[in-house]
Each structure stands twice: as C-alpha cells, then as structure tokens.
Image (cartoon, rainbow, N blue to C red; front, side, top):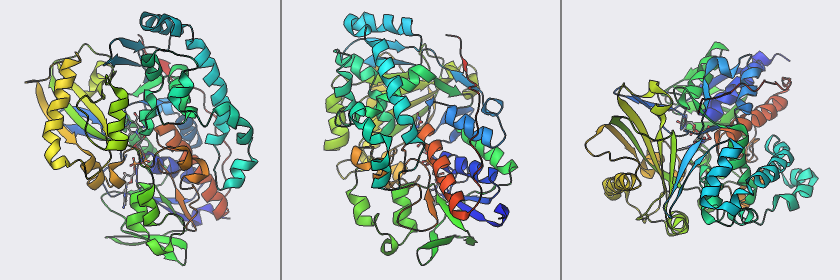
Length: 512
Ligand SMILES: Cc1cc2nc3c(=O)[nH]c(=O)nc-3n(C[C@H](O)[C@H](O)[C@H](O)COP(=O)(O)OP(=O)(O)OC[C@H]3O[C@@H](n4cnc5c(N)ncnc54)[C@H](O)[C@@H]3O)c2cc1C
C-alpha cells in the first residue's frame, strides 16, 4: 500500500489538528490543513500588538510527555523546538475568604504553605499525592485508547477500576477524605475550571489534574503556549503538510455517508478521509447536513451540557509587577460564583479571576519596563440572561476594580494596550458553540464513549480531534485525541501505523 497515495484533509489548525498532521505525515500520507483564520493555533495562538505578546487561550502547559512523544514520532525533540520553563511557584492562590498559598512542587515547602493555613490538612498532602499517583497509573490506559462503544467500557479494566475511581463523588467530596479546610480543597480542585466545570460537580477522577501539576510540573513555553502551535506548524510544513490559511471550510462533502472532501470559497478539495478539529458542535451545525447525522443531530447538540465561557482582558501595562507568573483569585463565595456561572447564567458581583504576569518569567513578551498581563474570568457561556454588548465595559471595570482590591496591582492610568474578548466574541469570531470555550462539559454522561467519538460514529471516514472528542479539553488530552484518531484513521485506510515513539523527559526546573 502506498501511503502517499492517500490524501487527508484536516479542518482547523488548532493544537488538535496540528498534532494529527504530524502523526499522519509521519506515517507517509498526504495531509492538507485548511484553517479559516489567517494564522495557526486556534485557541492556542498568540496575540501580538504594540510590542506585547499574549496567549489567546491556554497559559498552563502541563504534562509535556504526550507532546514529546508526538515530536519524537516526527523525528524531533520538543526541547530543540520550544524552550519549556518549569515554574516554581507554579501559581499563587489568593482566597477571597482570606489567606493565600504559593503552590510549589517542592513537597516540604508546600507542606509549610499548607500548615500556615490549616495545620491538620498539611499532614495529608503526601497521602493525596500517593492516592492520585495510583489513580493516574490505573486510569492512564483509558486516556490513551479510543472508546467506541459500551463494549470498550464493559471489556475494560475500567469496570474493575470504577470503585477505585469513585465515579459518584465530585472532586470536592473526594477531597474531603484528605482536607477539612474548604480553601485547601479548592487549592486542589480549582483545576476543574480547566475543563470549564465546578469542583462541586466535576467527577472526582479529575483530581489527577492537580496531581499532574505537582508531580510533573506546570510549564511556561518561552514565547507562550502559542509558540507550541507555531513549532508544530513549522515542523508539519517541513514534513510536507500543506497548510492553507484564511480559507474557511463551508461544507463537508459526502458520497452517501462517506466523506470525500470539503468545500471552501476557493473550490473543492478531495480527500480519502477528513479530520475535524473545528469546534465539534459548531462544525456539525454548520458543515454537515442535519439529516445525515444519526446521533449528533442539532436538537441533541442543543440539549447537551456545555462548559463555561471566559471573559478576557489582554493588557499591555507600564511598569512591572511583584507577582508570580500565575495568580488565581477565588471568590469569597465560590459556590455562589459557580452557581451564577453554571445554573443561574448571570454575572457575579464577586467573580473569581486569574491574572497571568508572564513577563516575570519571559521578558520576550513585553517591551522593557512594561508587562503583558492576561486576565481571565470564568463566566456563563452564551445565554439570553447576559447581553455582552451592554455588559462588556461594566464587567471590564468591575474586574479591574477587583484586581486592585485583591492587591494584584492598581492598573488605572497604566494601560497602554488593551483587548477584550467576551463569550459573544468566542461564539461569533472564533466559531465556538455558545462561546463554551472548553467544549462539551466533562460530566460523566459526556465522557468516554458518550463523548463524540474519535472515529466519528455518525459518518464514515470522519475523525474528530480536539477538546470536543475523547479524552477531552486541555492540551495534553487534546494531543492524545490526535494520537488516537490518527491511529484509527491509518488503520481504516490500510496504512501501517508507526510504532510508539518514546521520548526522554526533557524539561528543566526553573530556578525558584
Ligand atoms: C481562554 C482559554 C484558556 C485555556 N487555558 C488552557 C490552559 O491553560 N491549559 C490547557 O491545557 N488548555 C487550556 N484551554 C483549553 C484548550 O487547550 C484550548 O482551547 C485548545 O486550543 C483547544 O484546541 P482544539 O484543537 O480543540 O481547538 P482550537 O484551538 O479551537 O482549534 C480549532 C481550529 O479550527 C478552526 N476552524 C473552525 N471552524 C473552521 C472552518 N469552518 N474551517 C476551517 N477552520 C476552522 C479554528 O479557527 C481553529 O483554528 C484554554 C482555552 C481557552 C479558550
């Protein structure tokens, strides 16, 4: 079989699409990525303006192992392409209810931080790490394989694992086994926000997220996470992948139920298989006729649960800030804030927020003497209760007031560059269904085979990569989705799947 006779089209140059391109090109198939925006990276791209550089979306780069292996499969070393700095402290958490933690991967120093807030809880930190180390080892195989039906669930070691994974418990309920102080529980569960969920609802399995940070590190890629997308695109191009920018796919083309190509304003592009990296629900609604979908019809998409959205400020500011790289403020009444986001769909008066002060680690991001600040507040996804045309300026001012009140810095009079992105912008400008920046929610009824599947179950020769499919949203699992889907696609085309690539861990701990 001549792999090079097979043509694959990837719709979207986000991290999922780029990682799939590397895998498929390494197997020898011809790959064309078609991207609607004039740049690569999707939500993991870079905003550059007036000497400042900001990540559009992701700023926490966790668990580089998956990407290291994808680079190794492409014959490269991640470390040679992007410099990764391990952060210590990995972040500061400021509790609206009082107290703060500078969270560090150094176990003794972390215990000391915890002791200052809750002495009894500090003794449990090592137990928490040990329990999650075991949990990750048990669950990891499930993250690396496809889930194509109940048989994969029933077959699996997963059934035996279920009691160990406590599927009925939320992250917060699980953490009560270790920590009595609600602030400490939040310090190990706010990471559910990476999935766009509340720790009071997010399945306890995801306590592995905070464990991953302490065990494997929180990294800053020099130049920002967008530098990773750029590196993937550069390597893909060198491997012969064609990347067409500024060219929206307007329709997937079918012979019966089998994908045979895509349409763009530039014409028709033939393909033996199509990989969809564009936001799943939006792509289905816009690119695939409702009548040929079986399971994921528009009415079903509308009934599904979606993640929160985010209100964003990208600020170029005069002066420097005595703040760590990542800073998280957790609202005094966090439960109320989450209820506002997830159930009441209104804006909170005391919102949680996150400030990234990346120039403290990476001077390449701002002109000398200035800082690139990235501010993110989790908010409801698009809902009739909130009209962003009316709320945008008010919410921006509220957030700047909160930042000053929390002691992160008074920005008034110092802002020299500003860009705002609201959930309405995520929806319309970035083509994200309901502006739900972290895709379909990660509730138990929307995980594993209940998520849209990697080998898309509704259509032939259509594969999904990115946050909308299994395993879920967040860069390491998005890269894993690209590996799973690429393997399935190559098997279906009869192209030999390259063996697993092993990469040496390559990342350095930055000086504290
Ligand atoms: C504000 C924010 C913060 C985040 N923070 C983190 C974090 O710290 N750590 C982390 O691991 N993850 C984080 N994430 C989540 C996730 O890692 C990113 O959103 C990631 O970029 C999603 O990747 P993806 O490949 O699924 O899709 P995307 O990045 O959205 O890429 C999809 C691509 O498809 C293109 N496209 C869409 N429609 C079409 C069409 N019709 N034709 C052609 N192209 C099309 C889009 O333009 C886009 O380039 C964050 C996300 C957001 C939004």
